[in-house]
Image (cartoon, rainbow, N blue to C red; front, side, top):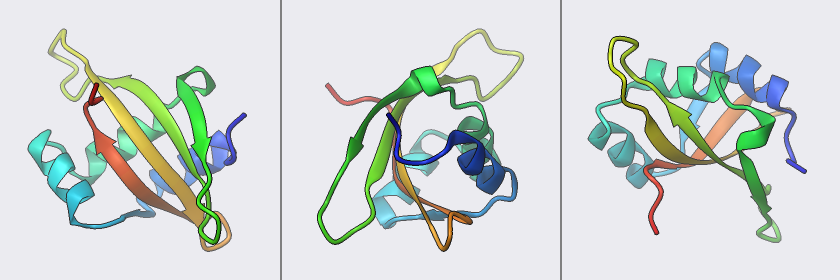
Length: 105
């Protein structure tokens, strides 16, 4: 079961209350050709069935991991399968995005 309520995640995403946890996340998003609106849209489309697991780190807030499909361009037939990992901070008002990239096997 996910640590964070998906409706709270979607509310924060709709408000663009999203922070990137480091340069790698920013670079991965840019490499996909995405911007903040794409990230927000993807997070707003998350479903409970996309949830994979919660990562616990001791003194830090846990991260929820999702693998989802997102279509950047509605005119295209192709979806990107994405690995997304985040936590909610500041009283669940901000998404702290830890990972956002294609799955790496």
